[in-house]
Image (tube, rainbow, N blue to C red; front, side):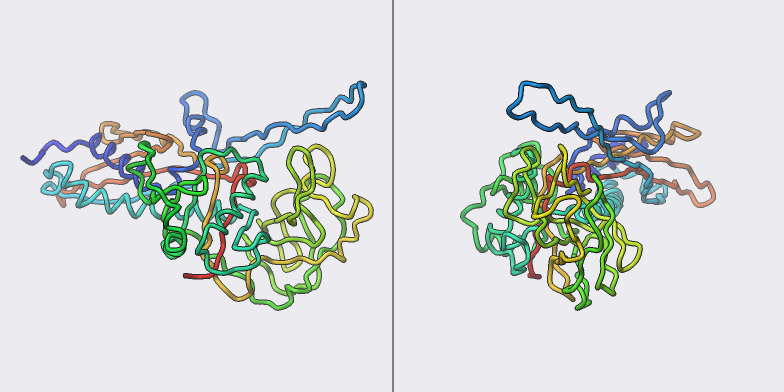
Length: 410
């Protein structure tokens, strides 16, 4: 029997359920900061500062104290993007029962909305990730990812960044997924994680990570200029926390999201500062022109946050003699899978205000997602206008706990 009393509250709950189900990437990252926004009487604006743990140096071989000042660093999570989907229903459509109404109207609407939000967040987080892995340990041998070598190299990057061993995930498109499964089908086992059984895209688990098939992964486009082979740093690593670089011998501006290494500049263990065998990887996060770039991570050449080593000191590094290598092959586009720990990224939704005629404006939250549904009638056309809104933001809070997996197209 048709439900002639299909209420806005029922619609809101069903829309939220569908949004949660279809959040393939968002559903696997951190959402613990959501309740800081929109609290009545305690609003914090649209920006939340997320503090990083303090880092200290070891006093070695001495009983004499060497007291250190605490240096608290932070990043910002801005919740300022409002997306939505708008619909209209007539009286006949509103007379459907909830199951029919959801299938015919809500499901396609929420699929469109959440697919695009999920895509924006996944691409943004991937571009913020500076670790880069392929079938070679340095990430430069870009061949098809048809074994666990690429995921294994990405796993190494996460381990080197001290990412916790649990709550790891991989977002991969179906082409790369097909190649991996064909090559190593025997290693894949069905996931028995009951909490994830209704999540779209979950395929299996291996190599210490849950695999999600997601066609929204970013296609990394590499630069076409041949002058990249002669690009070099200009100047010195002279300050702690340096995020700007000046480059010489390059004529074409490099895209945001491009990963590069610098000759003789090596990665280190985050706690012991012991030098690793692999070069430190950086990502371009902003550009001014072909020679001026903002990069991540910030460069620390000494102190408790030291993250690079090599045959140099703060005063002797002649950086202009150190060549840059842009990872990838020129003039090509590569599907970019992403391996990450849950806390590498965060996503937050704010509680949008309830508007006038609140009986037709309902807000519901579940598992870090908040939706508002607002309706009003059009008496002339016997229609009910409906808008569904989400206010959100995202940030890479621990990008060292993530790595791209890049191979040739499938």
